[in-house]
Length: 306
Image 1 (cartoon, rainbow, N blue to C red):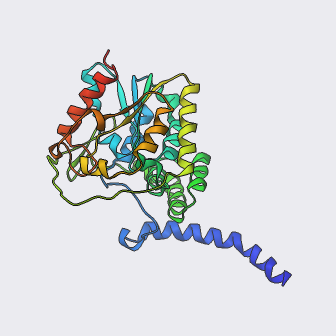
Image 2 (cartoon, helix red, strand yellow):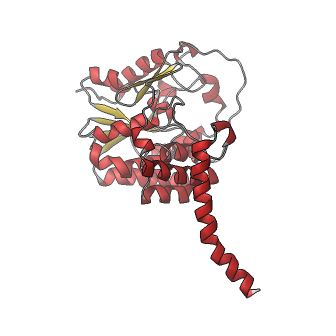
Image 3 (cartoon, rainbow, N blue to C red):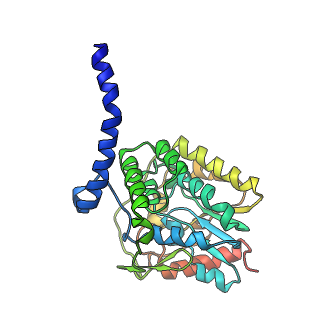
């Protein structure tokens, strides 16, 4: 029995090496529909690769935006530029506090913003963050902090993305890949904003939204706030408007508001703005028209203009 166990233990390193090689070969040769556990977010409308390439060239700005797709669809850097503010939008798809903390640790000291706007909502505290981690790992350089993030999320899709992303770093495929600036209804605007050409959204479908907050996300949120406070950077927590049916369906608003209020500068624009469906392109994302109205309100409410 001891001999059998010894053979198993000795075989593990070879199995891991074979698995990693298999992931790389599989990722290179197979079409996306045949690799459901090896996901990629490139050319999908989030433009994470382009955004993470551009952020490396940014420094000493007035405002940094971080958060989920509500961020990169919700804050138009051009509008803030008209108000005399230099900004960058570092939102990524389904970004949770775990990934926000990761991105801040990686880029904050280079970007050096005077202020940070954190996009917050109950949703980002309720999910594990698998999709967002895969998105970031597959579009940015892999290092020790990437491995730590993968271990924290602990999901097979994340591990596969980590392996393949490391392979793409070695082969320089990632650094030489260029995303198309326009994909369907979405267009990437320099500075990280993604503009949508859809004008309105109509749906009478009932929505029931109930969930529990993830302890890991709450801890990561507290850590990232501490990170910003230690650098004496002013910050604001902003709940971007979503459609009324979706907002009223959420059962956790009282708990969420209580958590956010402990961190100070919190603004729920769902309470202060009343936007019809013509300002959205889906249930929870503003269209170009909605972004203009919302951003003007943010600049006014947060006294951001110079």
